[in-house]
Image (tube, rainbow, N blue to C red):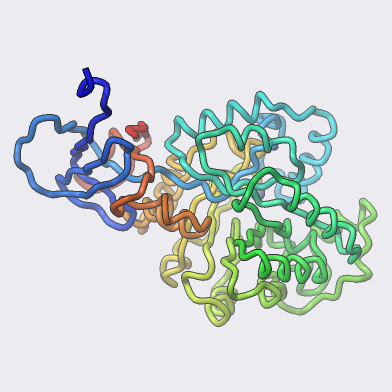
Length: 397
Ligand SMILES: [Zn+2]
């Protein structure tokens, strides 16, 4: 009886095991009774109790950018309006459609089914906290603020209070929403707080070209739209530089920075970024399906690959996506950028995301002792090592 109720070790064999960094052909992943990794072996001996799967086995996916609290806005925002139009729609629809905990629960549940084990999640309010606390998914909460260039300490003080009072012990940060919505002063205050509390900083970066125009010379659609609704830009001084080159020096080098979107990031921005930070000190988080939904545009991935920059994957929210699936984002990148390899894509979806959220002690790879989650990718093109449109993900552990 004792033997029957004791959970057993598992041996999972597949055409390929991706360990978080590279593919191993015809390998076997060995897990202990608690689903922690023991080892990856390539012995092909017939053994009793080996589970064999057709496809590629990889660690659980990391969704490095989401807004769970916007889940109730699914299908309520018009597509392809561009970022300025998207912002006004979200503000309007958020005031019309009440927050729904049920929508958050369903989104959380669908992420589990889609093989996601850890999420970097933006919260403007505390409404989604209960769902995050009770989920088996690991959440890092980014408490997101903006002051629309008012320069007052009030926004920051409220965020500090929220940071203290959140029910999350360590997996939390205060973060600036975007360069176009936060004053230099607010970013500097958050930077000091992040240094004291040693957390990663996330910021929506260069999602729309008019963010760069605002910084360059106070022109462009974002600037004009904000002026129309009465935002006061008298405190804001243009810099004659892109947004990234204007605000990045404010963020402490010791704190990891997640730059989200990067649709309008160019080579001179990359050179600037590289001059300030080493590759392990920042991550470019790409949310291609959200970029297509909002602006029908994509980030210059070939430029990021040529420069060997670290890339992670985000789904963004259901306000700008139809599904919260890291696999769908990978398919979108592969379909639009033929030069990216499946190893690079899977690394973005696993170890790079885990590094960005500072959870690589548990997630992102099959190093011995980790409980990273185990996904099986089925219906993969194993000849060319590519995803297919019909590729699916199944959670094995
Ligand atoms: Zn976002």
